Image (tube, one colour):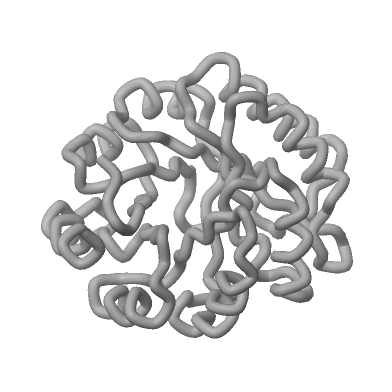
Length: 226
């Protein structure tokens, strides 16, 4: 069931995915390790979550948490993960992003990734938020039809602080879906909606209590975004 505002929530395992099989969310992002901003989950967990989830699952493809610069060996690992997710799971898409050493979008790596997506969708994740130039990076991404969605906080740690940049990107009217996330919770999401009028919102710790998914928070959030 799709709602007025698409709601994506982070999960880390099959039990959490099953807990959200109740129409409260429209899409899941599967990650490993919240503390590092999300890394690639194991392929086994990816397959299990995709099998149990009643909503689309986008899987993080990120081999390390140091930064978003990847060498040839790391890209080979990324390619192998994409191939497995495409051919052996029911994943809806992948969540990926890479920069070059100057902090700009690594277009060579992006082209290589989009070329092997097949049926998978691509969300370019918050690597854009640590890029050297937010609007330049968004403009670069808009050249690639394979980039369906960009997850962003508007170049700040919190999307609330990045509202002006998010509005500017939205006003560019590209084909890209802007998925707004980072730092959102029940206390500030209404303000974000009022200011940005987003079509898609992404939450992680904002719907958790003591690290665990909180159904009451999820229900409140769904009422706000319905």
